[in-house]
Every structure is written in C-alpha cells, then in structure tokens.
Length: 93
Image 1: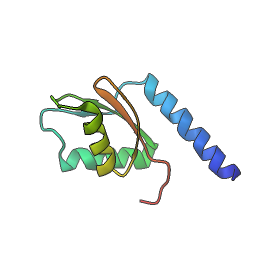
Image 2: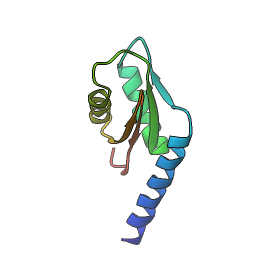
Image 3: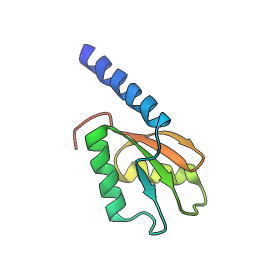
Image 4: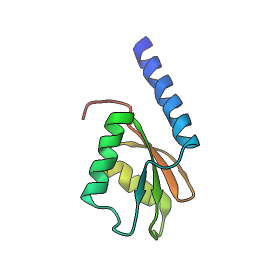
C-alpha cells in the first residue's frame, strides 16, 4: 500500500508541474493522426503526464479531450480552455 501511495503522490506532483508548464504536444491543422497518438503514448510512458494544446477548431473541447484520452488509454485530468492534461498511472502497456 505504501508503494501505491508514493505512486499517487508522484503523479499528483507531475500533474501540478504540468499545469505550470507549457503544453508538451500540440494538435495542429493535420488533426488527430496516428503520429500524434503515438507521440502522446510515448510521452505518457516516459513522463506519466502530458499537457496537450488543441490548435484546431473542435465543436466540444471536453469531448475531444475524452476521445484522445480513450485513444491513448490515459486518464483525463483537466480541460482548461484549449489545453488539457492526460496522465498514465500504471505501466501495464
């Protein structure tokens, strides 16, 4: 249980750090491509938390962020304006 608490604490710290920093990934005019999804997955595996900026016109930003979270098998942490944060708490993938 102690290891789990340490993991949760470190994820929270990473989320806090991501909120303070600029976006790591930007979704631009090409939209959601396989390359973008792979890049988000890679960064999640490497850093556990990714901040993503939406640079295209989308109808519903929250739904868009949920879709990206689903495609990358990550947890949607927050949507604020055109930016959202995803986190990956386990390393099963």
